[in-house]
Image 1 (tube, rainbow, N blue to C red):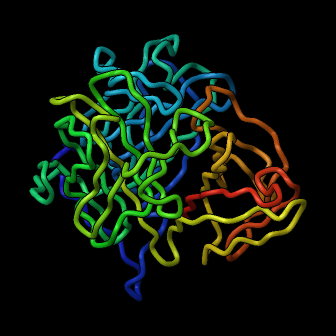
Image 2: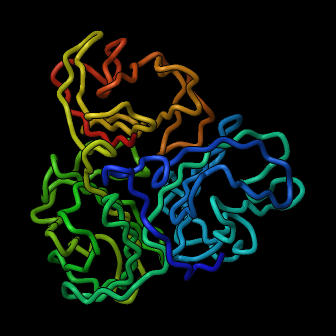
Length: 337
């Protein structure tokens, strides 16, 4: 499959989105050299890999940046392009290929190491978008509320806009400067335009007025805080879709309980406190039951951490202990069915 292959969105018999045709976590065991992963069920456009059995970086790959170009959510590094012969390659129908050396030295296919790959379908080939003050290249899955946006910063201090290709206002956007060492600013609708989190850090919300702006056609960020003039940037944009995804927030109640309604049983969830708390991620492949005890962190290299925190329910999740539910603390989350 070439990067330009057009991908059709999958709808159910009644017109609803088919979750497993637009997002799917998969597990695999490293073999060394190259391995084809075809259990995704669709041609992935954004694949986030993490070693489960040992400490290693979170590696993010997408079809807009191109095959084998590494970014790490727990590092501030720019794109790693010198390794592009390795990493995740989007050259396989219904999945992707992991390419490594025989010892697994490029962190995606080490012999006998266990991995998870979280996969999202965008829109296939990127298209030009002229909305906003800066042109962008966008791969958008409009029905699934997800797009990958590439743009070149002009370094301006006030928020500068670029097109996102979706039909609704993005509710969570993750930004990264591809050309230089920098943070991963994160916008969340319930924090607002004047506060940001950082994907690579457990830091609390930092404020700057204004820092973001989001509309039905554009995303905007204070680009002088992201990149200098001429630097290439990437943004991953999400909004909630009924029965498929939910971006929300909650206030901790302490102890067990505090049911959070997403409208579906989650297959994947990421939670972050607005205070100094890690970005915790769990899915229904790493965990073999609805009692979610196996976690990874977006901002950390750790292998799987065992914490009995919450249960997935038919309509969302609730807590089995106080952690990530401390009294009066605020938390944001993103969940997929």
